[in-house]
Amino acid sequence: DWKVRPDGVSYNTVILAIANNRGRGSGRSAERILHRMERQYYNGHLASKPTSATYTSLIKAWTSEKASTRRAEEIVNRLRKPNKGKIAVAPDTSIYNALLNCY
Image 1 (tube, rainbow, N blue to C red):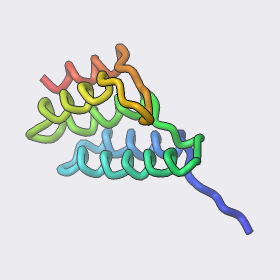
Image 2 (cartoon, one colour; image 1 turned 180 degrees about the vertical axis):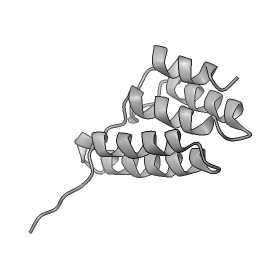
Image 3 (cartoon, rainbow, N blue to C red; image 1 turned 90 degrees about the horizontal axis):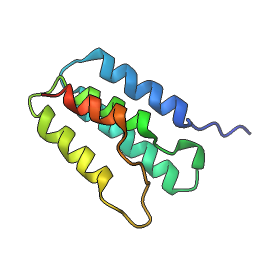
Image 4 (cartoon, rainbow, N blue to C red; image 1 turned 30 degrees about the vertical axis):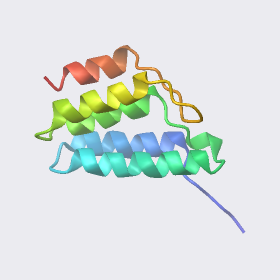
């Protein structure tokens, strides 16, 4: 009885593939994957913890959307706020570079 669940590498690969596709709805699709990843992490699957690379790819996925700048800023602002009991990922150079690419 195997219970195989995707880990952070699996989720990051899917989010990056969505971001590289740059199709319509890429941002929303990537965000759905992120929410699934976060749920798994909160449910005790620690290997699915989002990282800086996760959020960098998420922001990159939003660059093809009309509301990309606004949504990318919201994502970065969410990461900058201290959030008790939540996943702590501080924005780093790669996240800020992805944000700059939205402009």
